[in-house]
Image (cartoon, rainbow over all chains, first blue to last red; front, top):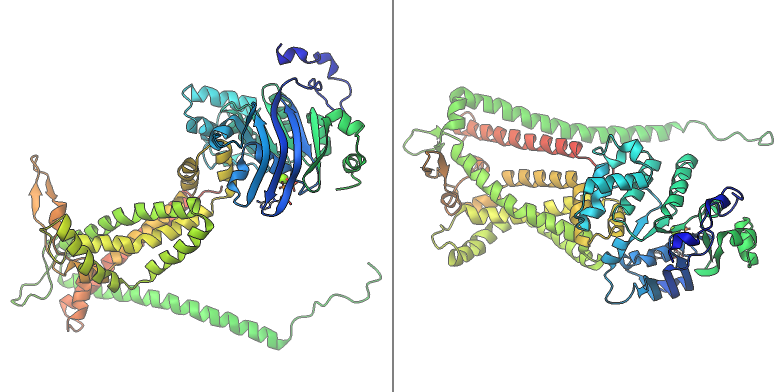
Amino acid sequence: MSNTETKPSDSLITTDVETGSNDRTAPSDRTAVAARDLNVFYGDEQAIDDVSMEIPEKRVTALIGPSGCGKSTFLRCINRMNDMIEVCRVEGDIEFGGKNVYDDDVDPVALRRKIGMVFQKPNPFPKSIRDNVAYGLKIQGFDGDVDERVEESLKGAALWDEVKDQLGSSGLDLSGGQQQRLCIARAIAPDPEVILMDEPTSALDPVAASKIEDLIDDLAEEYTVIIVTHNMQQAARISDRTAVFLTGGRLVEYDDTTKIFEDPEEQRVEDYITGKFG
Amino acid sequence: MTDSTESPDLQRRSGLTRLKEGTYGGFFAACAVITLLTTVAIIATLLSDALMFFAEVPIREFLFSTSWSPNPRGGGQSFGIVALVIGTLTVTITAAFVALPVGTLTAIYLSEYATSSARSILKPLLEILAGIPTVVYGYFALVYITPALKATLFPEMSTFNALSASLMVGIMTIPMVSSISEDAMSAVPDDLRQAGYGLGATKFEVSTGIVVPASISGIASSYILAVSRAIGETMIVVVAMGAQARMPAVRETLLGIPYINPTDVLLDSGMTITVAMVQIAGGDLTGGTIPYDAMFALGLTLFVVTLVMNVLSDLIAERYREEY
Ligand SMILES: Nc1ncnc2c1ncn2[C@@H]1O[C@H](COP(=O)(O)OP(=O)(O)OP(=O)(O)O)[C@@H](O)[C@H]1O
Ligand SMILES: [Mg+2]
């Protein structure tokens, strides 16, 4: 009953590159993260309005929608990064592995060790490349071979060949796109189950961005990827499922990416995707 | 493009505006020049009078003699700086032991842990601490700290002693360390903290493993400034440490290595370089006498030490500058 066997064979990939250009279009049978009646407030202002959705395991799920519609807020609920915002209040459940992460007995620190995050602006630590990747391992008390894991992670982030001779030099000396891949390597090094990405390519040039896109495609072999993006083509290219949020923090439509981009149920979604609105 | 008839107003300003601008510029420059001249004049005076002193007293005697008595009643002056250096080092090192850790931890608390309301109370309090005149600190040390230490830990301590004075100098420099370090830590971009938290770091791990290393140059600068301040501190030391240039007993370890027992120095009175200068300046000496010139030799010594510290601090700031 393993997941991989339910996937269509590779021969289906090559055609129809416009949408869902990969082999994971069939919905997974397992849910990695689920939101149930989620409401989020910043003070009196509501940022997420009664959102329920199930995010499949080992797939790329894209969150799209106009600015301010609550995509980042939703993402930060999943690993409880919202806890650090004093005015932020969360109601409802986020289930991860069947457990509500907002339960009293959940330690957000432990949760974040299972859910990696990549931010909009590349934010490597002012440390060496090696120490950047090893940071998560260090704080999590990893007792295996750190150098081996660093190498694996950098390979996983398609950065190894470019940096293997300069692991000791500062992560800040890399280009923006390399820095972002370093951040991805850092996020996957502790081997999380889910990777959250908040507009990971919006600060990058198109070439660097397309490298990250390829990488995201590979990451979904092993990880559940949830990505916020403003770039419709990007969402169409890399994701299996797409959730469209519209103003007020409402989830308007959530379906297979192909369906959303080719035949959305909602007129508003079509307007948004075709650029008539937002 | 073609239908815009009026050309933009690019005319030079009227003569009056330009004159006003010129006057402002001249005024600011004059202030800058005054500062510069004062500095140069001070250094020149220090140098020339110090040179006069070294014409009378060999520099070797100044640096290596252990006896300091510029105005003995019975004659036989001596100008050895060693006892004074021991006094200054004692105060500086002891004060550093108080100010650096407490100041750094305070800065971490303020920058990383404190809620905005706690911060809004604590920061002004620290600024008040920094604004108290040092003579008040001095009396506080003499009247409260010394009796308290005497009653509890060190009954054999003398009324004027280096320990109370040094502790007080340390307390006085805490705000300097904490405020400069806190500025450096607050300047660390939030991105880096987010990255740490996103990897499952605790607040402590983020503070010590990310924020402190990223702001280390600012922290180091604050240390050096605080140490410079302790070296130059006068009032607290005059009031609480007494003013006796006492050379502590030099003992020998089993292997014959000479050492000075810290308690000999800390629990007894002593004199620092600054206090020796105050004492000379407070006497009715006129220019041209050797003790008078000695004051400038001491001043020059302090100046050189603090200058080196400042250069060091700049170098450290330069060396460890983080671009984030
Ligand atoms: N830290 C905060 N404090 C108060 N309000 C916030 C905070 N962060 C977000 N908001 C508000 O919550 C709403 C949703 O913000 P969010 O950042 O989730 O939107 P977004 O969809 O990610 O937008 P963008 O595409 O511009 O990144 C906005 O109205 C915003 O003003
Ligand atoms: Mg956002």
